[in-house]
Length: 231
Ligand code: 6GU
Image (cartoon, rainbow, N blue to C red; front, side, top):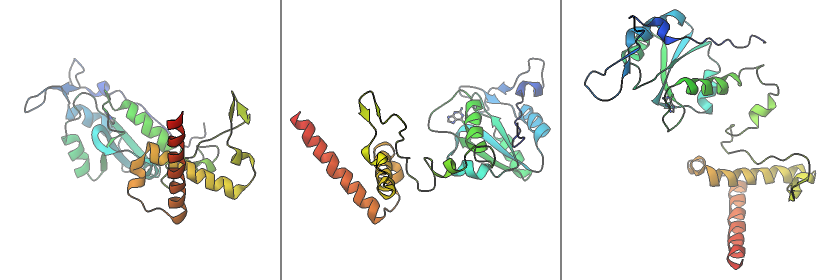
């Protein structure tokens, strides 16, 4: 509506070179599966590429997409997503556009296998476009979210009512004590990160307060385990 972004979708088969509209063929060297033909991809890409374009080849063999990459991509003028199917795209497509001076990257959205790169392209498009100024309603929520600069998972959120199906909102959030609330949120963020994403904590140094909060959590966990062993 605001013309902040423009997205086009293209059918690879429109660029097929034979009557069967074939886009894949058997792999040189043998083996299972089919490989996408370079000539078909070349014709398709040539039709949309210009000097501002960067080519992104979606493949489970690519570099893993993350928020950093989303931020970088959000500054680019034009992205072409080439969605691979089958056993992937003939590698000469990557080689050719690289040799022509284009930035080409192979990107994966995670360690699992999809049938094709189409859904991955949609995932990346959503993560990237929401970072473009003017796309998101409230720019502040960009800074405060999970995977923002601080590298922790976000703290849990609550809204009204203060009690729902017998479960109360943590008292501190109703206290109006903003320093206490900030500290509680950091503690919850640390706890969640340690429980769900220990990999995020592994390679970073903690501040004094963060170490203290984690120790507090350890003590609370031990106390809870003792309690549970009685019950
Ligand atoms: Cl980009 N493509 C496919 N086929 N599988 C994936 C992927 C991409 N990212 C994760 N798994």
